[in-house]
Length: 204
Image (tube, rainbow, N blue to C red):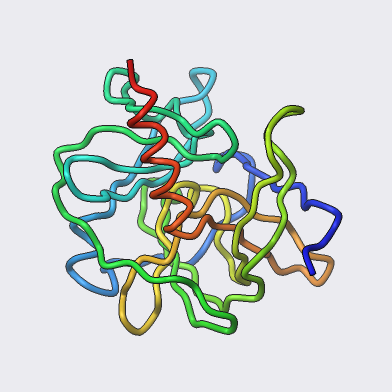
């Protein structure tokens, strides 16, 4: 049964929070490295903000809408009305094989922290999490959740099956748990593709 209360998800600046993930020098596969896009930029002239994006093939990439300031506005294709997703043009032509997340699945997420690649690992804990709507007229968001140390700098980055490297979803936020851990929220790829199709249809 769907939970009635929606989780309030945090989207924090990298400059204002502790480390996220673990330092990494390579990806789980070369294909992931070709599809991964680091995002960096300045906020209020003095703070550094970081995030990530993923190429979906055909010169299109996806990231979180709240990282919009890290992407050239002229490249933007569109933003989802109900979900924290933004699509933009890229010269990356790579596309990863996708799959649906499964409960207790071992996953890896990638993001940026202090201009370096970071990795976070965990296990899927929820396939149907409800996340607070982005606006008063927006629908409650649905997502899958996993435990791990992803956080600031992982927004817009990929969540992958740790064994196959298949793309399961896109990170958009997290909550700090009372036990000191973090629960990370990501949109499954079926949602991402559905929102991309809507964005393309509504282009002027």
